[in-house]
Length: 130
Image (cartoon, rainbow, N blue to C red):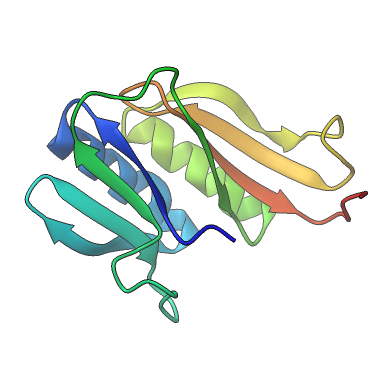
């Protein structure tokens, strides 16, 4: 079980604003902000970590860039994430849609953030084999 994760970002304020807008449709917001770092977490019902489970911090971005997937509760929420992320300055890396090559019921959208991290929102209505 992962408790939290994070990435370094080139322009902290730009990325903070991007993630605030992109993650809002998923119910995420800033849970804790310190100088040059912000922890994002669910704003409804809290989470296990009061500081958030996804962090960004000013610094040299990791190479290669990471892929981070955020859970959505519906296909509409995936669409809203994609729309908000693009409007916040992200780059489309896969529009909302079914991804049956992962498994049946996998509906996702992908956006590159300002540093090129591949950010995904996924709604999984199917069952995973395994």
